[in-house]
Image 1: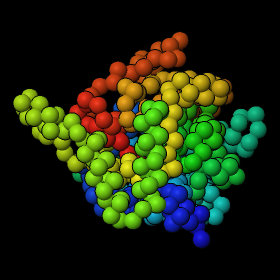
Image 2: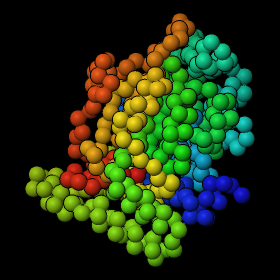
Image 3: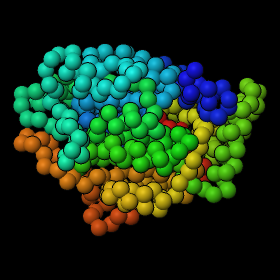
Image 4: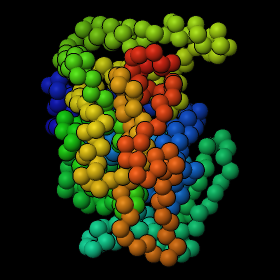
Length: 392
C-alpha cells in the first residue's frame, strides 16, 4: 500500500490530497487570476516565458496552473495520490492543451515528454551532469520564440510556440534518487510544503539542490512561536488520531480562536466603506479549506527566520525578499537566489533579480514591510485576515 496512505490511516499524516480534491471544484477563472497575480508579485516578474518552474508538493495544482499561464514549462509533483489526481483534474479543466503527462515510474519532465511526443527538441535543453552542474539552459532558435496572447476569458497571458507544457507526477521531495533525475529549474516553488514532510531541513536542502544557477527558490515555512507551536502540534496530532466528533470540535474551537478578531475587523471595514471578509483569498485559496488544512496539517514543523537564513547562506543562496508574519501564527516567506556561476548560450535569458530593489545587495537580512493582507499567511493577532494554510 502507498506509504502516504498508510501514514494517513495510522493518524500520522493529514489527508492533504483529500482536502485539495474538495477544493478543486471551487476553482474558476477568478481564483486563477488571483493566483497568477499573486505569483507575479511573489517572484517580481511579469511572466515566466522561457523559464522552467518546479512546483514542490503541488497540492491542487493551482500555482502550477498559474505558472503555466505565465508561460513557464512546469513540472509538478506531490507525494499524495489524491493531490496528484486533483492537479490532473485542474489541468484537464483549465489547460487541456498542456503536453505533460502523469508519470508513476521514472520521473520525466515535460521537456522529455515533449521531445518524445514531437521528435523535436524544445526551447529548453538539459545538459549532462558535469562542470555545468546539470543546469537547465535555454537554447537559441526558432523554437524559443515567445508568442504572447492577449488576456481574455481564458486568462492566458504567455505561451511558448515550442509547446509550453505542464507535467504532473507522484513523488516526494525526500526521494533523492527521483530528484536527481529531474535536473534543475529556473524557479523552485514550495509554499507551505516542506514543514509537512516530517523532515523539514532535509526537504529544504533537497529543494535547494533543484535550483539552477541564477535561479530562484521560494519557500514559506511556519513561524516558530515556542510554546504556542507545541500546543498546535498537539492539536494537529489529536485531530489526525480522532474520530469525526472530536475533529469537528477541534476545527470549531480553532476557528473561534483564529478568527476571534473578525467581528471588530468586519465592523471597521464596513465603517471604512469596505466589504467584509470573503471566502476567496487574494491568492485564490479558500478560507474553509485553509482552516481544515491548518488544524489537520500534520506532520508539523516550525522555524525561525534566522535559522532559515543561516541554512540558505550555507548553500550560498542570497536573500532577495523576506516577508514575516510579524512573530505571529503563520508562515514566513523567503525568496532566495542561487548565484549564476555558468555562462549562458547566446540568446539565453538570465533570471534577473526582479526584487533586489526591495532587498538591495549587502542587506542579507533585509525585510519587506509586512502589510495588512487578506491572505492566509498570517494567523491570529490584529490583522485583517488571520489564517494560514498551504496552497495548491
